[in-house]
Amino acid sequence: RMAAQIGITAASENWFCDGGGHGGTSTTSQYESRLTVGSGWSAGVKFPGGNSWLATSATGNLAFLPSINVDTFKIFYFQFSTGGTFSYNFNGGSNTNQTTSGGNSIQTLTVTNTLGSNTLNLNYVSGSGVYIIGVEAYNSATKNVSVLNAGWSGGQSSDLSSGQYSGL
Image 1 (cartoon, rainbow, N blue to C red):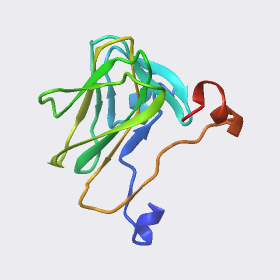
Image 2 (image 1 turned 90 degrees about the vertical axis):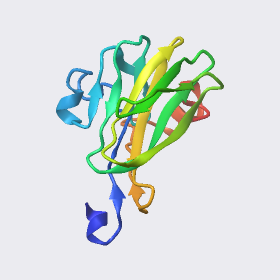
Image 3 (image 1 turned 135 degrees about the vertical axis):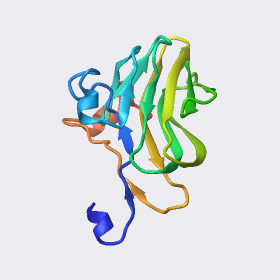
Image 4 (image 1 turned 180 degrees about the horizontal axis):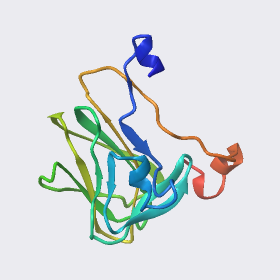
């Protein structure tokens, strides 16, 4: 809001590392009304910024409905050697699959639709598990600044240089 006051368009149409971070999946909707957590999704691996969302069964979707008209979604997910596959669709349309199998890293997938009130639905498809870190949504025709939650209470540089977070 401060950026808007000085003429900079800033987007807050994102959620990042919110996997049950507000007391579990049952309370997430109390704090984040744009996000609907279907059955089968739970708090996953902790990342800088909070927990990812983890799905290991194909029971319900993880849906994000931004409060403004958007045409682009950037999906952040964790890729690992035994990663599974998730699908995405817009507004309940046809699904497109994305694998999360590969070398340990954080990956992004940018997907587009026509500008409007778009719900992005993420669904587990197969494999040992799918970890969704977050989603950023925006209107690609508008320049803006996006601020993502990447803070880590108590985190130190050594946490990122060794152990499970090295290479991120």
